[in-house]
Image (tube, rainbow, N blue to C red; front, side, top):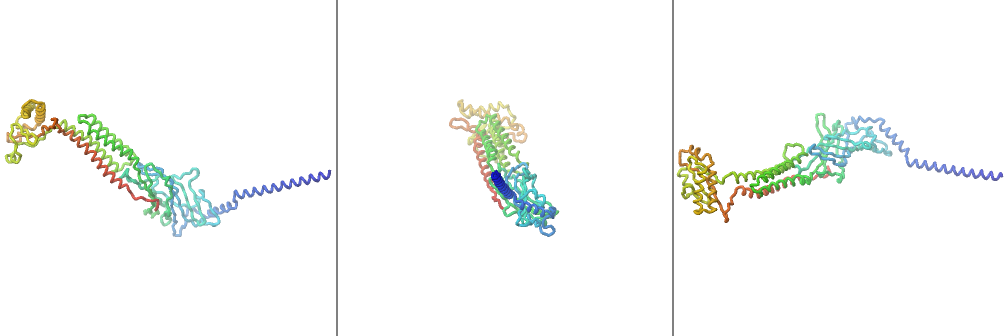
Length: 506
């Protein structure tokens, strides 16, 4: 009985010993794991370092204060994206990561330690007073935290990085619009410190970018180059640096929406040259429609542009198109007038000349009422009281019939009617009778009227028609002039649009 009791006790002691060893091992592993998750020693050292750096630090005082040395701030940026270019507002949007680097001897510390980059430390130290002078709007995103951080190395060099959404003004030049390129700048300037206190300069590689992210609907990014823009004002000289963004406008949109439609409108207006002169409704409607459509197209292009006072390339194009479209309508008015409202006669002179003047003229055969030479007829009308129109027409009809053909044929009737028409027009001249006679003492003064009364083809049909001849000439001259204009326009502006390419370098 006693032996069993002692064996049980020994067993229990062994179990307790094993449990104790297991507990010790578990605690040792937990402590080792905690050491891997946290470096408490380093954390404490960093917190002490931050406390020591800021203990006697005043962020209202710049580095090198009262030493005569300016703070040299190195500037660069990462170009994240171009957001928009608005010609009507003359501005453009861009997102950048602005980087500034300077040295602050008050922030030097033991190189064996390392301070992490943090956003909470920004408000505790001095930062440069950099502003963007041509910024209309500037937003520093704060989702999910404020998009900024600062890093201080052991030598006291400070790197300050912030993300900015900017809307910048741009002095755009539209002389060659839409075959233009634009240079838009961003100027970085010291606001309160003169160049004796703070001096800004570009990093040796100032612009970082990814070209596949720099996409714009109507532009291609042609390059970026940097410059110095130090300003001398009444309050002092301020350090300033700038970056120029070069954009080249792509022509595809305006080619499809402006140039091709307006060219088709001009060509459409030429259709009227093939429509009969008698078709007044068709030709007038076609001309007016093309003019109104051209005005609408022009207004659509102008809507997105600022109201500038100088002439743009698109203005020259539309002005030429208007000239061709309106010219087609005016051409019809002229052709219609000459065909229906103007006789085929031209008053030469009053024939009351001296004998010397008459000898200088070509000799012509005498005739009672007219003579024929070189297929032209000069009808001599005695200036006297004007008879009735019917009397003139009758006399001219009889003379024409008797001089055309002794037999009464259809050709003779046509020629007689032609003479009658001319005589009727001549009788409408109000100054033939009394005004001309009153101005001359010679009662035998005569009025000479010439006209090509008739020109026949083999079939005997008349071919001379002023209106149709103008239409035939216009069918060739209008397209030819438009082609010449296009050659001059495109050769000039395409050559002017070839600006020097700038790389993304200083």
